[in-house]
Length: 279
Image 1: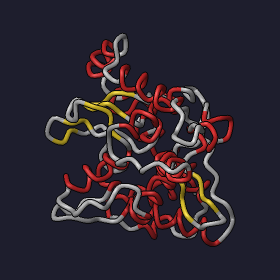
Image 2 (image 1 turned 135 degrees about the vertical axis):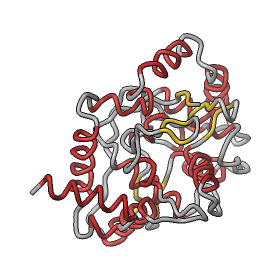
Image 3 (image 1 turned 30 degrees about the vertical axis):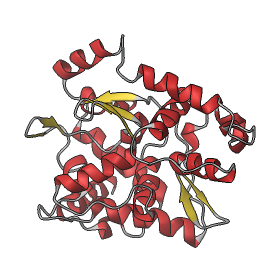
């Protein structure tokens, strides 16, 4: 039965039909995804998926590991720490807005806020903290917000994601909307997220080695060679949409937050390793 369900997941990726997993619970989706990738890459240990393409290619991994002695995001993380600890005009700091003063909490994001019926990502929480303390919000894709988020992620390294999808209709709907977005084709190239990261991980597209879906949120924010700086997960979402010649949505749109909710839930049990580097 499990093998047949895994085949359905693969078929759903090929056809971009979310109904391939219709009726399944989030935890059933996650377990099926883990089993699917286990069959696709039987020699890759589960915990290695946080390393993306570097779990699949030894040459690329060797080059990547050589960067870790002096990671290019080091100064940005230090700047993020300084900004995190610097008081706002009212004397409070970011610590006042977060559980455990904002240290070691990255693995709890995103979460579904049942009071306001919406997904809250870490970057959204950072900006709402600023606004609650009389400060202007930061731009969501790069710059200061990426540095602050990277610092907060660095305090959670090694902690495993444990995202909850509550039983409420609203939380379930947000998860399902994220899943549908992931499997829906779009743009002139008619690709879905799953076309690359479920159907074709381990294959090359031009000079890029496609990574599996599992573990992708674990790395963010990431410093990409292409960007020459740190960027948030929603910056990457927008870039992927452009790559398939689809109109990108605004960072922190409801659609992207729901997508992050689904994708991060799929990585439950994997640790935070961000910030990290990617090509």
